[in-house]
Amino acid sequence: MLKARIKAGPVWALGAMSGTSLDGVDAAMVQTDGEVIFGFGETAYRGYSRAEEEVLRDALGKWPGEVGQEALPMVQQAHLDVLSGFEGAEIVGFHGQTLAHEPKGRGTHQMGDGAALAEALNLPVVWDFRSADVELGGEGAPLAPFFHFACAKWMQAERPLAFLNLGGVGNLTWIDPTKDKPEEEGALLAFDTGPANAPINDVMMDRRSEPFDRDGKLALQGTVAQGALELFLEDIYFRKIPPKSLDRDAFADMIGLVRELSDADAVATLTGMAAAAVLQGMEHCPTPPERVLVCGGGRKNPVMMAMLRAALDAKVDPVEAVGLDGDMLEAQAFAHLAVRVLRGLPTSCPSTTGVGAAVAGGTLSWPRGEAP
Ligand SMILES: Nc1ncnc2c1ncn2[C@@H]1O[C@H](COP(=O)(O)OP(=O)(O)OP(=O)(O)O)[C@@H](O)[C@H]1O
Ligand SMILES: CC(=O)N[C@H]1[C@@H]2OC[C@@H](O2)[C@@H](O)[C@@H]1O[C@H](C)C(=O)O
Image 1 (cartoon, rainbow, N blue to C red):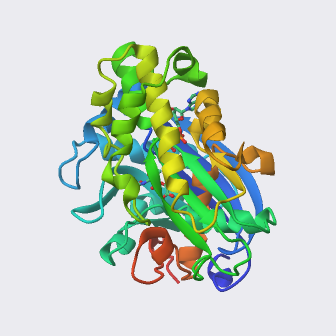
Image 2: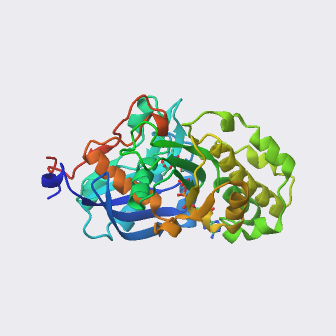
Image 3: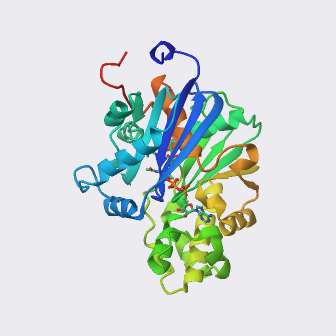
């Protein structure tokens, strides 16, 4: 049935994302033709156990061939666990687990075997979304912007707005929704803003053996150390003209800036750094967005949200304010992008990843014998 509809019409796509915060796999259904969103479907989440998270932490920064034996089967199984619970999916978008990202060096590494997943699920699977963009000189990230553009159309936005994802790393997409296509000049500008939750999580784990600062409770008790914040903002990354992207641990040194601080001040300062990095990013936008719609776990941190609202000259809301699901937006993005790959539509362009020309990345694997 999918083969007959490859050329036109909406399909139900199932997307899966396992992000840099290493908490688990998000999965979500989207009905889309790769351009227009026709509807959102079910979602599910499969958390990683502490032991699984440890396996992933050990694998961080490693390249194919360097990772221990247990990581790949674990990532495959976690995805299979969650994806096999869905009904009605016609195609799967499988992001995989980013372990290393060095677009101007060794490339980008998302662990996961889409061909094996296609066999196991008996569905076509699109995977390895980032390599083609990197091979053509792009950053390979962020890739959600082409989906953010479709979301802006879906919500019938009329004026420039921004989506801000606050995951382990932060990324911002500025959108002119009056343009027809995401790859059109002036439609999008996207880039990673800087570290978001990853350093907070690392300090929480290190000092308190807790995975994150739930509801910003610890940050609320602390004070932002201005000196550390200023040193952080001196990083050359903030002056780099976008598009630009980051490895999860690109700013690992910033933890050194808060080493001498109390737990509460350290976490407050790292939270302030995440917000300040977004403010720096705003300076690069073609026009100031009137509205910033926030997705990712950081939107649940009231201290981070308050700092953003204080810093930005824009209405800052979680994406739920417009009827979207901020926990699932990235999983939905890879569902939508899978259909774009199926249809040969681009998934990135010069203004989102810095690639020379619009590129349709991703590998499409059919279950054995089913390729059209
Ligand atoms: N209630 C909460 N209070 C504070 N922080 C929270 C809360 N819920 C989630 N977070 C933060 O959000 C993180 C998870 O965010 P998310 O799931 O968006 O990240 P990710 O998708 O793994 O990362 P990325 O988008 O960088 O790939 C958690 O690790 C935590 O730091
Ligand atoms: C290399 C990689 O996996 N990058 C992630 C990471 O997490 C957030 C930010 O850094 C973004 O660049 C990207 O993910 C989102 C889903 C994206 O590609 O849009």
